[in-house]
Image (cartoon, rainbow, N blue to C red; front, side, top):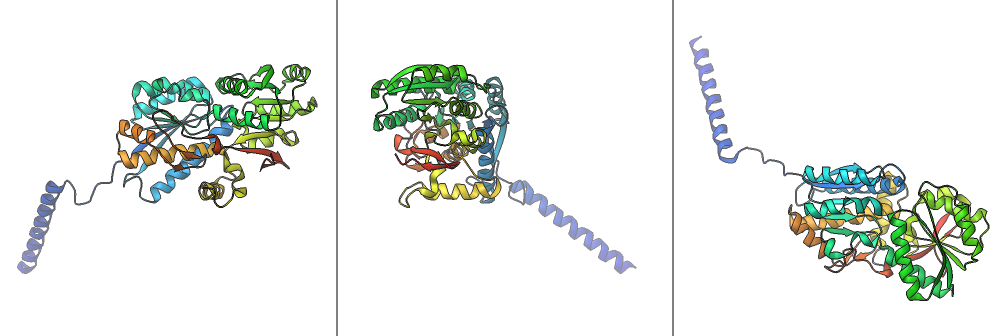
Length: 393
């Protein structure tokens, strides 16, 4: 009995010594197990519901897909990537509120929004907070004037580039008399302004300017005025669903002039809603929608094919709007890898972006250019047999 008691006492003593040694180890290192690295938090503001949901949904899906992959591969310099995704509901006030909430969350950068109007609503907030913003929207006003947009970048092709591409096409086809119809919002207004500049410089006369609302489904009064002018071509600047309704109305009124849209129709929703009326529509867009038709020598082809494959596996066919988000998040990740969790240095690294091959184009940013794309990053696409095809022109 005494022997058993002695053995038990020895075991208790050994346990006490082991605990003491462990305590000393903890006092010296804080933990015997290395703590997990803090997450790098990035904010995302997208038009996931509401009128512009056909843009925001593929953008949301794309950034989630990228974050999952990054974290499976070890994160950013060993830090997990945490996305805080908020929905603007396609409302500018909601976008502004979302941006403020993300700043309070302590995010290192913000991606979004999906539309020009939603993005413009948050620019002052991010500028005042000095936090990098990479928009997925088109208006050149998002990044200009640069002295008022130091913290703002964007990945969608600027409407100034798209307008120039359309004017080049008009000149090639000797179409000098056109009509212009646009949605009555920031995207449409900026497109109209940029097209007016490009048309004037290219010797193109715009005989009539018409507007419609994003909620409109019947645009016959505007198109009646257009038809009276007998234009050689009609330029439309809108996104679905209004862009699809306009196209249906256009065909119903049997206007013979070619219909040329902006890059705002570059998703399957436009074709689904417009149906047969989409046939023959021409528009400039990034190369994603015709990736399979690109030559092997194109520097973007591998990136495009891989993105299409990755996205399709989980979500279905991708579109350029998801591509804008792919570029935005990868640009931010690249900047964080170089700068660490320092907002000012992240901004500086974004501005130094050079030769970044993305889904939308090859980005070369600078203090004078916070978009970094060129007209060569656009291709002219025609909808034939319900599919996107490189225009024969």
